[in-house]
Length: 239
Image 1 (cartoon, one colour):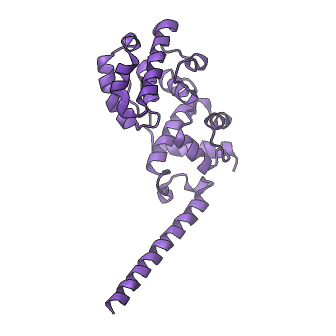
Image 2 (image 1 turned 90 degrees about the vertical axis):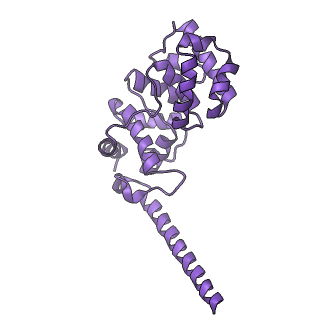
Image 3 (image 1 turned 45 degrees about the vertical axis):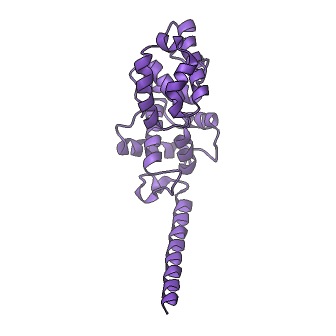
């Protein structure tokens, strides 16, 4: 099966499985998403959503946040980890928006990438979710799933994965498809535990499924063998 065919099937099946999938960071203005996505690095979206409530209450706009000292920002965002560097980037980013972009978040990739702390993943998220333009967000879930499914070939570099996906994902589907990969990666095709392949709607077209299924079978056999060994030891001890 060609990658483009596999991608089309993935899009339709995940669309049916997660029809309402969207960004899991809470925001109602573009600049707030810009701040939240920076805080989300090595931090859960759930924690970010809690932390930014206090941040945005104290600094309700770009101008207010741009005027804040990085140390004051850090005191609030510290629970998200890497507080100093994140606070520094947020401060510089808001000041650049104030000084160079008339207090508005730019709606093009080139200008977004000029902002401190904003990489391609963040810029694509803003492009897709805020401005509803074609976007592909290559976060860890996207990279892991695309390799497992077979949409890319053993590629871990985010930009290279993004470029490969542009060739097989229709532009209008990119943003929502990536959100659905996040949902699927958290619920089914997990990273820290063995993926739940028996519940996966992509099982029959997944390149890694035979290998993952074999690994799971071996793990189950080892568990059974371990239980049998333990039971036999228990009997011998009683005798």
